[in-house]
Image (cartoon, rainbow, N blue to C red; front, side, top):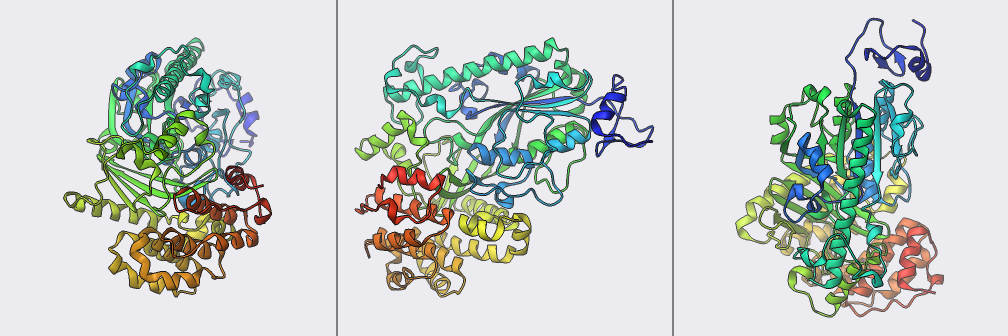
Length: 625
């Protein structure tokens, strides 16, 4: 048989029977026959946590159209976005790979990384199988996008209607910005204006102060959730009008966690736990063990979504994908319900660095903070546009918050452990509670295995990642697995008792490997005053040949008031020729200036050699002229 191009094939082969097969864009062996494939449509609501919907609890809002979807489909009780911000979460979705394994964990990217050798963004495989793939409209991936991914990448909301024939199966992604964080960047004079939801009825989370502004912000966001529900109803109506509703799997989910203060951009459940409702079409319900109208208790994550879509479409899942399908042929519901853990990650959000990894297993959540002296609430310009966020921080500065409300703005601990069933908003850290020592050890070990097995490239400062690993991150990780494990082991000294850690810190300080010294200094900063015995050694490192080592040592010494760190940082900013390195240095400058240590950092733009988009965000906040 003569080989045809994909478009020629679709125009000339009679697909109305629904009987065809494609491999690599060409007609498969003559006589090969498969059943008609389902359509698949994603509705991604930006910045929506599961906590916002009544389907997940009484604090959420009623969403009639989404709830109707649930009656004809399944609700996933434990769906996680892996990363609490859009570009990293989307990179996980489109690749099916954990972001720290392939170097896509930074939001916004300073350098786009290549797809792993032998792996394509998953819609490309659907196109090979004859699907019409469209995206409306966000494509903010942190990896390079090939031309074979979308038939239409910047498409209209109903782009599936433009497929070559009425019987061509389609995969369509619809991202709605209606619930985006920016919708809460209202004018302060808007407070008190008419809303559909009454601010007086809002149940305020224990981490937030109960103020009129906070209540108005909650109610305004719930209004936007109603708007998205209406949009969802409109999309379902279009599918019904087109006669394809019962041929189409519809996934409704948040693109990351919610946008109320302290959610998006942070590794709490409100940033990672998203709603997921999948409507199962009548004509393809035989593909799934899940029954319409049911709920799934097992854990699923964004890393699993690509494998699930490919499985539903009858397309082979590439071996390089990290995720596993949770619906479709061959997937047992009992097996999905046994899945009880999810991995999460955070590295940089715009100009804000904080490195954390999470492991949710059953009802328990473990957070490993790799630079715990940095508070979650360290300044991030975009987050702080929200008036409620500003007020929350202002009340902290005035000493008007209770411990649960103030915790966000104070230094973290290396480890956090929460019982989510008893403490859904993560206010009571159980990591130092002897009653939970066994659970802490279990989750600490579980997370350690994940980050070493990947291996997790987030252990490298971003400038080192760009210089050494960004051209082929996965190959670099495999080649340097032992080296990366060594850095992880040094970083993990901060979870030990100080007396046990001290000799190992000294050994790392004496290493010729720059990152050994960097992580040793970071561990010292995590111990703070306990590490005063290392002042002399750390003081020597403020003259280190590596700028990050100098600054991290100066940060430790500045935090315990052993030296004035400002001259060290000023000289480093004058020397740094890397945007990522400069940004890391400025992150620590903001911490030392804003953290109550008494340093004013009265520098100027002339003191900063290298500037870029994210560096300029920091400089704008620091108000250096």
